[in-house]
Length: 530
Ligand code: AMP
Image (cartoon, rainbow, N blue to C red):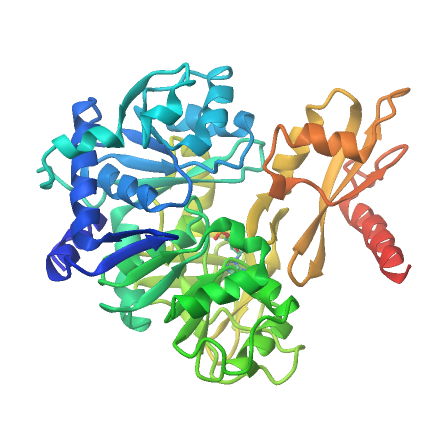
């Protein structure tokens, strides 16, 4: 490898396997040569529109081959892409756009409504569209379209191509109500790939899945893991997530070698019992990351697929894709067994520290800190948050994960929960504070609090909201849910609601969250017994 720049690594692979298929989505396929040529043309269009090195470009693109072209093109133009969740409400996307301050937006028709709503809230830069006809009704500035790219040269642009620079910003839930942008440099991703592509033996001809949404950290491995190694990336249509048999068929029909997703997806497939004994004969490995895998789910999969290697990957977006791994030596003996998060990937460091940032002895619980190649430069234009989360200890820059854990005497690390109110629900990272801030802005409520209750299985942690309505305002959970859906994405909407006369408070006058959790636990247990 001559460079850590992701687009240069992809270009080197293009030279090796120009005619191999690089990426597929439904009926759309691009060979390596086609991907490279289209990305080069779009990079030139981006430059012609005045974008310069370091400028951000927001991608309002659904999961399609065009999105992969746009990502590569942005990097080739030395710019920084920001994938936008098209299912988020405009008010939340406005925060992302305002923080990222993009010079350009690249959009597909699915984003038309969102972009129109956004225009009413915030200023938008020019929009480069995949299909101009579909944007006839758009009142903002359309700066160009994919149809015009054919007239541009399809060779790479020259430039400094500095791998220490940001490649993309990924926005995650923020406890203060505003999503925070994690800066990911080319070097961060390249560092993970150097370990992961060899460890998982990704090679020319390997058929990999692209399951997570493109604004989620895990997709970075799918994309660059495949495209820097000559593999064939099969983007999974998001609508299949509702149809377990279709998802299983997807693995079968595409003869995938590698599947990578959050555990919730694996639990979903297990719950629908769509995996046959000895199913997916081509599958060599199954990887998951992002949350605890229920042991029962893993047992289900491992019993049925004895020919497959199963690897748990652990790590936050701030440390790029994953920092530790554990490949199962054998199926768990019982569903009471917990699955270790394993050992640091090459180039990464994991520490269990106490409050004074001193290492705790093996077996004792502390907070997990991460160091090494994957460590993000920090949060986008937020020195304060960066300084809080990225700290120095023993001469090393490390990231405070907010995860609790311990290292066992065999050297394996274990995840033991969170120090704060960040949760995972169906694989989505959610700061309950973000939902609380949104609820707090609603007129009809005097007070509201959101807590998480562990339910395991597919859902992970249930989102539970308690509220006190303003006097004489009858507000139902249904109305609250509807109003809240204008402020937070669907996956952040509480599934459990309770109206109270007052929120329980502790001796310091703070909301008594353990007491609130008990209220929901009792209600959910009672519902379960009905
Ligand atoms: P995200 O930034 O969305 O990848 O979320 C990162 C957080 O997800 C971590 O800080 C952990 O709390 C959790 N997480 C990630 N991977 C695992 C895993 N393999 N096991 C348990 N929790 C995980």
